[in-house]
Length: 369
Ligand code: NAD
Image (spheres, rainbow, N blue to C red):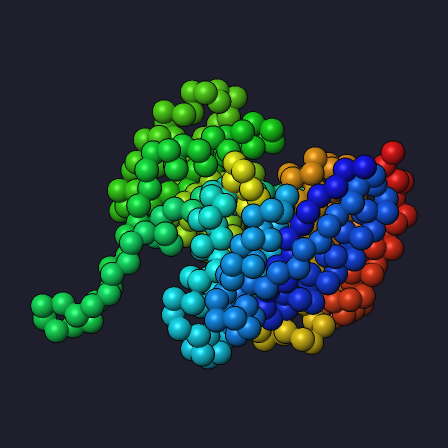
């Protein structure tokens, strides 16, 4: 029997609710497969700061270090609550970015996927959705503005100023582009390169490197698109996209737009892969507006489990079973509050009920021998 250690960082806000549902699914997967998961819970984010004064405490680092994979819930507080934590200890700066840096998880895969049968969840018109949306955003995750040097102070005119640096070296750019080309080669063989080379020199270098790498992947067609135009075209004609690659901040913003196209950020799981370590997290935040109300959609967290099964444990068929089970629950007409619009024929269920129904569907799938 294979055995894996999974660090489980439930996080803040809706994190514990959606993590609880993901664990239900993991427990069933153990029963259905010749595999055991040792779940190692650890505190991370604002909750960890309030417990210990550190949003990424040493005890959590130790657990993550020895885990085979990390399952991470969203972290963070509301705008007002965040002010209770010193700026450098706030969850993203104090925990998330340090984790990404520590494990060098440079490749972030964010599927934006809505099959035709579920197209009614999208705010886009049916004629725009067509056969459904099925694209993946590949986001560089450990470089750019979020990781560059920062400086604040008062300038010679006596004005407060801030300076943040956007830095990439060619190795950082080429490794994420290789990931994107490989993925495009396994899919529709079209890669949209999202950049801003008309303004940013970082994009000029990015594009230069892309041109150097492209001949290694002759089967992949590259389409270059400015990030601002990409934002528009995602709304007007999302089905033209299959694999999109972009630097860190562009990916942060455009992938949330992806959640908007689907109808909810609750439909956005992700995988954050490094060469040695991977972690899996919903693309969204801790949703303080609905935390503790059993309104959160756990699809993003259960989908992150599916991505973990596929990428970290090579359980490709079972990952597909998990996706199918979630789609099946929607297909039966159930959904959490985020996707239950007035006038739709959807029966609204709570976070826990959604998880239970996924478990029920998954348990009906043939067991993998
Ligand atoms: P958010 O992503 O938490 O929420 C935006 C909207 O989407 C809200 O209306 C929320 O209710 C809804 N939503 C998000 N996930 C949902 C789900 N699973 N089911 C149903 N609805 C869902 O963004 P925000 O409110 O701007 O940020 C809240 C906190 O999260 C902030 O502290 C922010 O810094 C943090 N954050 C963390 C991460 C991360 O952990 N990787 C990512 C983004 C934001």
